Length: 306
Image (cartoon, rainbow, N blue to C red; front, side, top):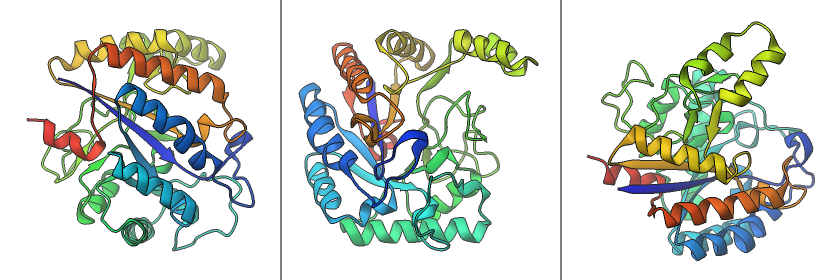
C-alpha cells in the first residue's frame, strides 16, 4: 500500500516576508487552486486536503470554489491562524506569526471552537482534519480537537523545530497519540498524521543541531539535515531520495504527507518562486504516480490503517 496525502494550507494572499496583503485578496485561491492545482491533480489522479484559514471562509468566491473541489473529491478541513478569529481577533495583522501553543488554554480552546463553528456554518458539515498555523500544536491541542470531533491532525514535523515549535520526537508514521505524551502512540481518539520529513543522516543531523558555530551548523544541516515533501523547497532529486527512505522505514504501509501553501503557486503572493514550486510539484506528482502511489485525504488515513 502506497498512499499520498496532499495537504494545502489555504490562506489569503501574502507577499515578501509572509506579510498579509491589504485589502485582503485571494488570488491564491482563485488562481492557485482553481486554475493551477485542481487541473494538475486531475491530470495525475490525486486529491487534496485543503486546510482553510478563517479569513478564507469569509470570502464568498473562495467558499464557492472550495465547495466545488469538495464535490470533486477533495477534503476541506481547518487551519488556525488565530489573528483572524475571536477571541482577540486583530483588525489587520501585518503577519500571521501567533502560535496557538503560546495562548492561554482558554484562548486556544475558544479559537478552535469558533474556527470549527465557522467552518460548519460555512460548508454545512463538521471538519474532520486540522493543521495549526506555524505547526503550533501540542498535547493540549490534540485533546481539544478530540473534544471537537476531529478525526486527524497534521501539525507535527518530525526531526524539526519550526518557528520555535519542537516536533523532533514525532514518529514519521500516522498514529494515535498518548494522553500523556503527544509523541508516543497511545489511546487518543484522534490520529496524528505527520508531514513527511526525514534527515539525510539521523546521527550527523543530531550532531549538526548541537554544533556551537552557527555558520558551520547551517552548512552541516544543508548537507545532512531534513528533507521535506514540500515542492516549495524540494526538487525531484530530494523527493526521490525521501520517497525511497520512507518506503524503507515504513515497510508495507507507506503514507506520505505533502504540504505547501496555495499562495506559493501564484507569482508574488508568497516569498517563494511560484514557477519553481509549480515545476517541483509537477515533477513530484508525476514521479509518485509512476511509482504507484494512490490518493488519500487526511480523514481517510485512519480508515486504511490496521
